[in-house]
Length: 346
Image (cartoon, rainbow, N blue to C red; front, side, top):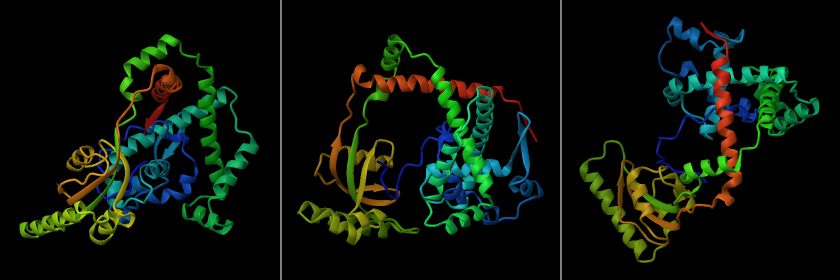
């Protein structure tokens, strides 16, 4: 479970989007609002920039099919929706753009190639399945008027949405068809993969923790920081003396987690900034940490659960191993499809 807090490590992997076309098309409506608005950037775009940001500008053809700026932005919107449940500010989107644009373009190429594969192999989407999927999307809105308003805000028509959903379903069906053509991996193949990726099957060490943050403010002097550290030390003394953690968190913490009594939920290594992580994973359940300093301020941490990782046997992990072996084959196929595509960039 991903905790909801104010100081996650930003080093989250971005190279995980190759399977992103399987994402529900609801993101087209609920997530596309995260696409960067050039007007929010604070500077006037150049003529070249205006062309780049014009949704109708064709930036490439893939197998003779035009790909526009709008297509790439829409793909980015779905990626951003999976990265964050909250809309990102335009500045953050622009910082991510150099990393996300090539991945978004590759996903578009992949979708086009998968559609060609589907057509060549007689793969289609039954009308009943398409209608059901559209009904599922509409059911996410309180009423028909709000659904139509969402369509209008994204500059889409019902026919365009239906076409997009059908394409998503078609590429998903194409993948299912391809997977059905793969022979079952041998026992030796599975065992070799398991032995070579043993660490992947070990459950991660995790802790469930709460904290109280006495946060730094911009421009804090050394004296101000010293006073905040003293405040954190006093809070720790109260906790060691038996005070209720949740109550003190609500009274003193400057992290939004205070609304949950300071609870950050369960998290693994690599998700928090290093000083916080080191302190949290050194604690046993029920223990209170010393005052911990990070770039965000001074923390007092309490761990409620500490789960050490365990490694399943080959037999226990066999189904997951088979899935991983097939996913590697699938990714190799994807990369081959992208490499084989006829791409002409403008």
